[in-house]
Length: 304
Image (cartoon, rainbow, N blue to C red; front, side, top):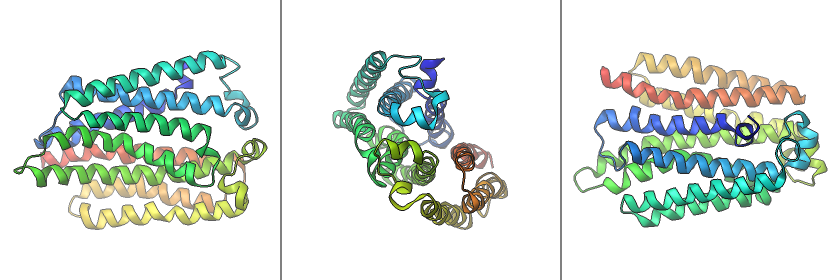
């Protein structure tokens, strides 16, 4: 169980679920031309979660000092799993992930796609060892990588299958995937800043330069409150322009996405304690989950 907690199995499960939903709830039901069969999408999921698992491990290795202060009860490396074992696991997961990515890239006739896995793997290491300590940059980079876990499905499924006849359809569905990726980027960015506010004490002692350390917890909370309106307006705009004709979709987004987002903004405005910011982080996780599950609405739209 310690290994599963180390690799953040719940987060990996969500990545796998979203990639499956993109293929089997968005692309396949509409007859979009795709490049991956069942084995192919399985390999893409394997490569993605292996590299993500490696990123989680190296992040924990570099976070031992801060985690000892911020969450000593959840400390794994040095307590349940040795640092040497963690490093070995980091290497194994990376080798498997990048190796599978190499095979998959060649199997779709796009060997250059292999570089995506290498770049993501390298960025996860650089993030954990260096970028995480930098003001905002680390938050943005890790949020881009989260968004890439969605975009990579579009890259492998749609781009190799583009022809002059289906180009418009392929790009339309790629744009839908991209929109979901932007949503994932925004929500994850808010969550990363929330975690920085929550963990400010440990981060400060570790010499990091996060937003709450640079401008203070109170001001960082105000910045977070202001940023929380971005997904609210974006989702509202999406409902008015794309979903207004489908009552079920409108209700879904209003109740399960807009509602929690409004609640989260209200909680951010009044939050002052570590416990309150932890609760806000969990709410943003929930928003992310419901946002990704909304892909199932495409199956409902298809039936109608």
